[in-house]
Image 1 (cartoon, one colour):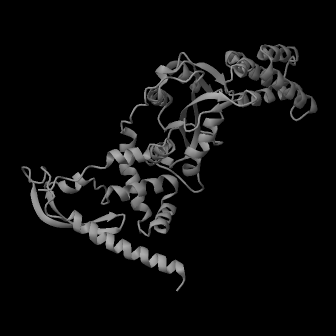
Image 2 (cartoon, rainbow, N blue to C red; image 1 turned 180 degrees about the vertical axis):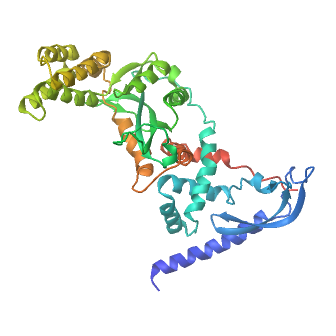
Image 3 (cartoon, rainbow, N blue to C red; image 1 turned 120 degrees about the horizontal axis):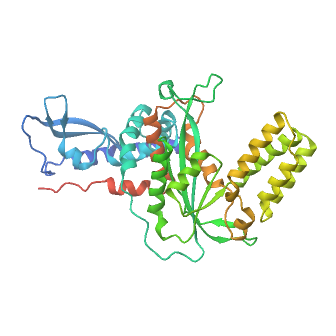
Length: 415
């Protein structure tokens, strides 16, 4: 017999013994809860058998069940033990994690491979949708109050990315399709992190384990309040220097104005460089040697010169064509730089040891959102997508385990 079959056989035997032990423990007649008595209008079904999933497999629990006559009912002892969707809290935890990391059928396969448990993908989905809202409403503990390290910078970033959704969730929304219809809904992602040190070249280094995320499909105003709450939770009020990094989207800067009025606003340099390329092409033609050379020169000036944006604007205006489409295209880019001038002081930011790129939130859009919600063939309902996002943020924020520590209820007192 191959060694792996020995191990799998032993695991199955241990699971079988564990099921018996857990079943005996949870069926002990001495467990009591105050609510285990009929209320007016209820009918009690004593010791009714109920199949419950656990880390050891399915167990049969015999409970007093109180039917309310309206199609509902309750099992007070199971409620006290934290049984949810017919599963123990320990199994529910694994199901939520698996369903947030992989699509539901893959999550079921992984759970079976790793633990020997057979849990259908649809059951994992129901668990995610049951507990996701609780995780979103969970009152997380505030950050520890401690002295702010000298030179620490508090960063806030925000961005958005579309996820594929069902047709009913885009009805009436303008999108990017040729007929202006939409196939996606925007998930807004925010992050908070700190930076205390620079490397040998003076480039900023993000503090390890300092990044936390929030994500929502709600409108920008609600997202702004959510991101501000996260920043406050992380110690915004004690920060000596707050920096808000974003791209050129108008909603991002309005969010920053309303929720982080004292922050230093920095437009992501790489977004600015993309607009520089558009400016150079508008002035000197697309894909010409002149436009490429000018773009490279302007990018260097913008990044390194204290008055870089003014130099670029002055030279661009001097090179404007008198008429035509190229003039219109160039003027559009000039307007972009004029409206964001005070967010483009890159030489000053670098001299202060600050980040000038929003790479953290760009990466977050891929890892927090894209890896789970933008896979081939997926079409989300908005509530289901939000539930997955809430669990994924807890995982990324290293708070998933803490939620479950607080979710577990103590065993009822034995009589």
